Amino acid sequence: MPLQLDINQDNRGYLQSHPWITFRLDVSKSPWTFWEQIGEARSKCRHLSKTPLSPHLARKMEQLYLAKGARATTAIEGNSLSEEQAVAAVEGTLELPQSQKYLQQELENIIQAISLIEGEIYSGSRFEINPDRLRDLNRMVLKDLEVPDHVAPGEFRTSSVVVGGAYRGAPASDCEYLVASMCEWLNGPDFRSEGEDHAKDFMLAVLKAVVAHVYIAWIHPFGDGNGRTARLVEFGILTAAGIPSVAAHLLSNHYNATRSRYYRELEYASKSGGDLGRFLSYAIEGLVGELQQQLNEVHGWIVEAAWTNYVHSIFSDAHTITARRQRDLVLALPAEHFMPRGRIPTLTPQLVEAYAGKQGKTITRDLNALTKLELIERRQKGIRARREIMLSLLPRVAPGIDPDRAAMFPAIS
Image (cartoon, rainbow, N blue to C red; front, side, top):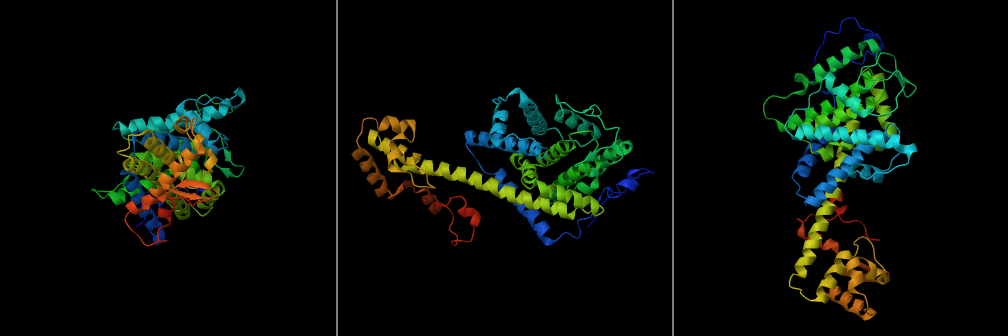
């Protein structure tokens, strides 16, 4: 069914220069794969939202994906800071030379804006889409940054703007009108379901978020920071719809990872006369892929925690120094590759202390004991932990059917 809302547009210049800005969305011809992927994205978000993690891992995940999302939305615009630096910025420990302070400011502006959006939503307030909201977000995006004289942070532009040397934003005289019309459309019945249809709510939220992003890019209402503002709006819409905030960052990650295609799909959407089908499919496909990678990472953490608990259960009645040393050894060993025997005494501070003054025979006895318990695998090139034992604790499936399940246990090298 076409999603449509006619707006009294008057006789404005954008009708000739930007006829693809129609405030209409027709998804009636979208292929079945598009709807399948929206359903898959919803399923993965539901699984993610119901996956318990330890307080440490939950906090780690929030910080990691906030850093990833903030870095992605600035990297698209040319910010060169690394993911590790973004994590440091989230933690408040990033220190850069003066020549790179503007990069840090760009990143921290996005981190602060995201945190403000989350705080507002999780305190029970609505994430309103209106012209004042867009102005506030753009003001936060450009806070304390050097901008050209014609750019007024948080104010609609009064001059023409060309993006990427090719795309010209909508006429400046129409920007305020177009933003108001866009907000009226996004807040209207086209993106609002009646009753408690959670599947439809999810679908409409995703469509609304991506469409808002594209329309802000098309209108380009501000002198600078339009892309970052658009992605903040997208994040806010998704988070307000109940999508876990760690997942709401993923579209920005996808756009950044596929940057050339991102710009290509935006260009096609305008040159095709406003057909958003391809951009929506591109966005949803990327969201599903990013969600799967995120779930693989989460499941990996869960497996690691389960492995730790399993090893502790094996040594639950171990009260001797030897048993504790063997337990610490198996937990320190990697599962993905073989660790040379010679490195065992230095793997962790606990093992350095445990093997201090001990001879090689002690390590041999420990390895023999752990082999007998089937907790390790020994080969000529070294020793590894047999973490794949955790597979026996999962529901059985035919081998080779689920590649994502196999991703929980990386290939052994």
